[in-house]
Length: 149
Image (tube, rainbow, N blue to C red; front, side):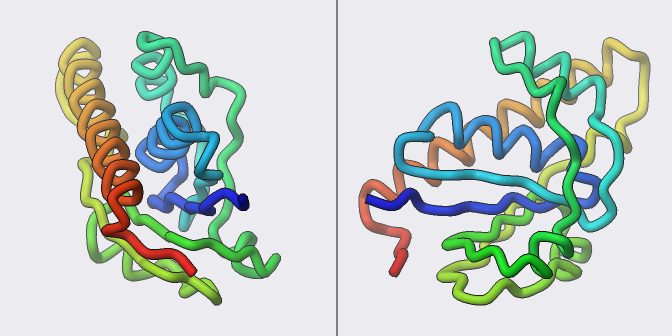
């Protein structure tokens, strides 16, 4: 059985999409194949690397990818899930053959303000929120609420 292919997209592919990719591959890599990319790829957010390491997931060697390069390569996905705000999510190219586009809005860890510790706490909250959405996504797929051809 082929794995369900999922692409997570955010602005820089430095935080939210990296977290989502890591969780889906970690929690359901036997059924799903997740990748992530950004509209304007940047550098991995060190706070995100740290909060993922805290729960045993190492993304420190991940690279950031360009969603438009994936599009030009003709990659096919069953789901494209944007994890940035709606206006930036609308900038994502439409991939051929997609069954569903899904929008999940999460705060951008690079835009957080406060002390290092305050940013770390908020980044953990974003991480946990994304994990919960991934678990819901997996469960909805299991219960056939999400379709794939």
